[in-house]
Amino acid sequence: MKEPDIKQVLDKFKELVAQDKYRIIERDENYLLMVDYDISNEKRKQILLNLTVDDFRRKDESRNKNMPGYVYIFHKKVKLLQKYLNEMLDVNLYIKFSSIMEKYVIIISFHESLYG
Image (tube, rainbow, N blue to C red; front, side, top):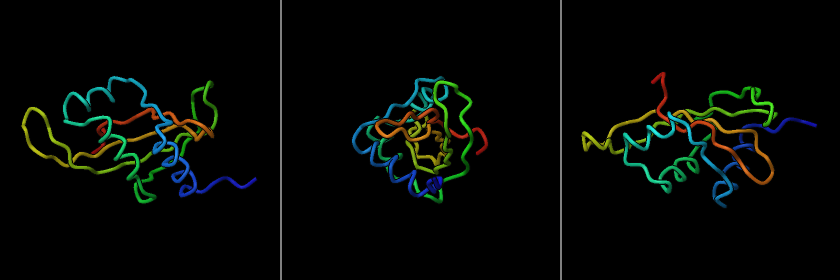
């Protein structure tokens, strides 16, 4: 069986996100994005739905034995309102999600990129 290309993976991912069949894991880095920037759940969803093949960086094997398969890593530049400066800033996001399960997707990382 041929492995799906990134466009197919992204299309399935967006289909599940549009149906609210996803979850963003509660991790410190993910939480800090919401503390520092004015970003609602709806805004996060729109960012996910606007990922493109050009935003794709790489695919890695999952290191989580409970979620075998692959993780997909994207970088997306977006404008967000920084709460404390009350200023719109360009923010480079690091987004990583688990291999698509037919019915649900897990967003492991949704935070500011550590590498700019």
